[in-house]
Image 1 (cartoon, protein in one colour):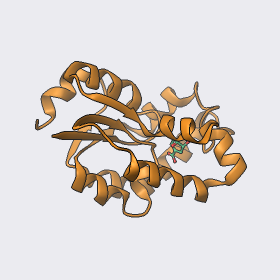
Image 2 (cartoon, rainbow, N blue to C red):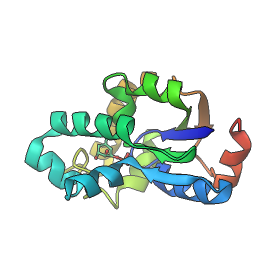
Image 3 (tube, rainbow, N blue to C red):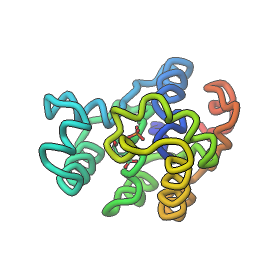
Image 4 (tube, protein in one colour):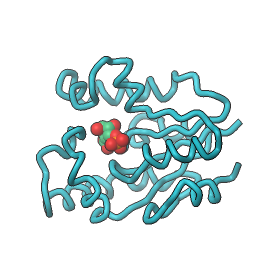
Length: 167
Ligand code: S3P
């Protein structure tokens, strides 16, 4: 059995890499934000504005722990998920965790488009966006770095990732 949890900041490529990795390994792919959207019948942005961040954190933790994953699965998580409750310990106990690491500058340039679906970033641009990411990342990195594997996200492909994993 292999369950691989991809963690890291918004924009690091968890969903894109996760989908490709799952296809390559012939594993089932899960995107926790997408599962939440399907179950709630609304987007993450709508969820934040209707119920607030605290309710979102409770809902995403429930989805993490209650999804009946296939034996072999690649699971992409929301950027904040490892930093709340005991989610990170739970993932470390129930699978292999991989932190996809990128610098605030690289994240900001990837996030400049696609910010609108991300309620935490919506109103930020340019240097303000880089500063916000640097700040949030420094709060979150002590969680992310507890992952079993830390992978440099620059130029990371599903092939490279498959080579790093201990399967
Ligand atoms: C969040 C990241 C998002 C989503 C929500 C909150 C965060 O997921 O869960 O907007 O707190 O970093 P992605 O990392 O998939 O964008």
